[in-house]
Image (cartoon, rainbow, N blue to C red):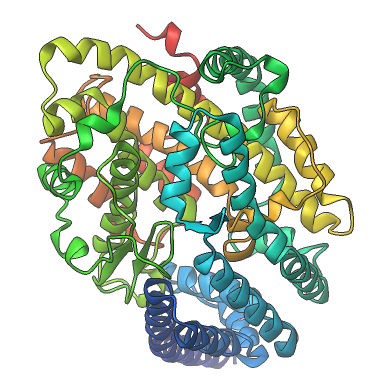
Length: 548
């Protein structure tokens, strides 16, 4: 009798395994078709700006959500998760579970969220700041904020750009409330916690990391902010009390003004595309086909920022850019190509569900690792032909520039992290006041006005509960940089990795090819021998004066 029982269990397990594989293959085939459709629709929308293209994207988004809205398939996924023993299938089922969870709930509610989101994204992409009857692109506004010396004009252009916040405020708030409604219907306190759960993160983990970051950057940033303010007071010939947000070089004080006596733009007056191609080729990462398929230059109606898109998870990887031959766009180009080489080098024998990054912040880390090279003295020497007399000066100044950039960015992310968390906890509070209180606390800009300036940040609409991943990416980029220097480049702090085929091979073999085969923390441990930590970021950018 015992023998017969064992035989029945073996047959049952075999049958379950067959059903499991059939279910996964069927799911994979359907998801791949839907994925390609939505990616192409989004590409057409952001590269053309046409209303019908955005309508097609909205339609594809709804179809995608509707597929994952299936309660029956969600229950099947949960059932097989508890029965599967194979590691690859287990990982697929976990990712499938999270995808289904993120789309559960009332489909009519999901549809409203998608419709409003698409509407607001379109408004952002078509928005052009208007000053005295003339429209200005994002690139033009950015240049004005960096170069204009008249405080009155700076204020005029800054306020004109913030108008987009007023235009979308009501829709953004409706989105937040609808997202919260969806999350609560699925048993979560709010959408912020729900979104983290479906992306393998926890609120408490993030609070711990960002509390540590706030503490370690507080005093260094206070000292740096004094230097920045002293520079700006002289530049604009104003008192410290007259310093306002429009004096800090960009719309959100997320990069910081140029306060050092060097203009890196002159070193990038040549074709930055050629520089990027040669650089990536030198480390064994070919980007030619990526650039051939990319949309690289600015035009009216087009998405005014930059992004990377994996169209099919089978090698068709593209970027959207608005290139100018300057340092900012050199950084952006290197950054987006960092995303692209990650996706381009997946192991394509992996199942479709695993041909993805381990986590969004892991691909951000790769992008940031390479984006930083635009300020690297060796990169400048190798690709911009600086002479030896300039090299030492550039080396010293770029260290300071990178420290400024990273400290300013870290404090800015603390604003976004805390604001977005509080936004979803209580969207009925005075958000204008909350925004400027956080700006004062973390960025030390004492300013306020009763206007929805927070709503002019597109990430709150298009990429909700995402921004903290940029900072996690910076932490991991420093950890990877340290590993590469120590184990591959052999402790050359200023190395840009140029001509190091071994660096490209290390990234492919230890990160890229694995796709989403491992959870992000497991992958980081395998790639660097350590868990994710802030130590290397602090060492690289905050304690630079202690480095020998």
